[in-house]
Every structure is written in C-alpha cells, then in structure tokens.
Image (cartoon, rainbow, N blue to C red; front, side, top):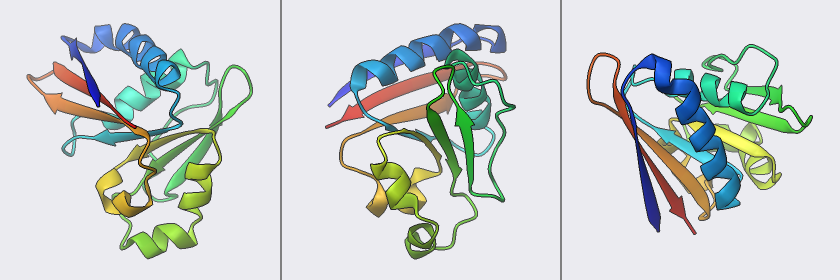
Length: 145
C-alpha cells in the first residue's frame, strides 16, 4: 500500500491537481476509485475537475438521486460516477448492479464508498479529501492491491 499526498491550496489549483490524479489513476491500473471526505469537502468538485482532465464533454454533477451517472472520456470510454450517500444497504447497491459496474474494467468513481465497502474490489484506489482551510484541501491517494 502506497500513499501519495497532494495539497490543493486554492480552487484555482484544482485543474493541475486533477491532472495529477488522472495520472495516478492511470498508473495504478485500478478502475475503481473510492472518494472519501466529509460532507462539503469537495468530492464532487474534484470529480468534476477530474472529468475535465479525462476529456469528459458532459456536465459532471453529483448523482445523488440517480445514484449513478455515466459519462464518456475523451477516448469514448464509459466513466461511471456513483454517489451512495442515500443508499440504505449494500443489498440495494447489488440490486442496482454496482458489482457489475465495478467488475466492468471501466473507470468507476465512487462517493461515499464506506456504504458499499463489501462490494468494492480489494484492488482499488482510495482518494481521501481533507479540509485544511476555506478553499484548501489535502488529498491522500492510496493504492490498495
């Protein structure tokens, strides 16, 4: 298990950080990325910037009520964005087909992953977003094998 730490001093730094995150995801070889952070830490904002870095043309927004949004990368590959905040149980996620998405090999960006921890593959990337100031954040990217 290795961890990379990236400081985000301001919102203006987000595009560069998203490029670093995209590179870390590609280097990891993992398709499931679990985003941890308190409510309001900026998980969706970071995922929106990551989408831009990956060439997503669509508006990236939180799938809070839909639970999953699908986008296309600049190469035309599917990217799945999950928000499990409102999910009641792992069984509900199973019924939604979460495991099939996770096993697809396509990029899966998962907000509130602790709610579906039993469904996440052992090999995944965890991105923890920690609030350090009004605009500043610290990112911890950990690769689980």
